[in-house]
Length: 296
Image 1 (tube, one colour):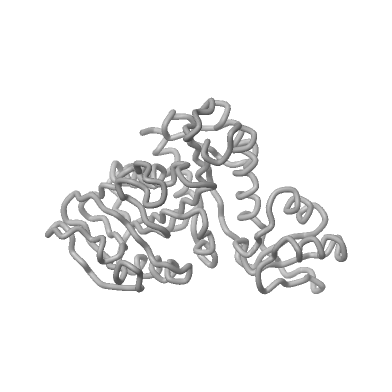
Image 2 (image 1 turned 30 degrees about the vertical axis):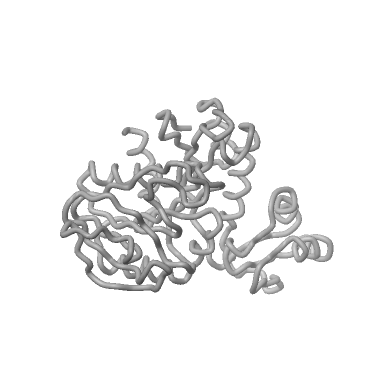
């Protein structure tokens, strides 16, 4: 539990209400990380709220049928989940409704007795942001957001502390897992534009490989400003070249505060001590293995 406390303290030190966990792949421990945050808050007597970008807490994954960690929430928790997923029990009090989803309107639920929940959030990034704002009005304490690998756009425009979850499902080797984590952290951690360069090139939409290659070839040394880091779809070496040859900035930075790792994957296990150290080096962030109880 001490490592979970350390992760909780690291995220809370950012000074934001919302703590979001996003993953580099499926089954890298996102929900395990969220559960650790929940248990740490409960152990310290801190009330919290929780919602999800995707769907979490089900017994098995809807896509690959693999078992998933369960979310059991204590009394006092506020949950934002699709109405059709709310347990039919007097232990759950629906306070109000919000965004639409395929499983009914998002219901804001007060947990009155310990209950197991499936959590399904809004289908759009803007809907997630509005749901978080609604939670902030209803609930006290931190708000936990269980993210999704293909929907990081929901991080845009928020004041969140972001934790990146990675693990053996992201690559066959420790070096590959660390490289994938480092790539995502660098993309999300683009620095804020201070407005000091009048000649900056502003990109209103997505910054993809074709546009990035053009900027590198024709505007070396220029400052390029994107609306937010989730608009950058460049990966790997091309992203590194973009950073090396241009000043890449954003008007809405994202605050990445830590990483978690899972050394277990479908094809086998990686050495946990070597993995946590490698990811910490690649991301330059505190890195936690909640299974093995390691921190680097």
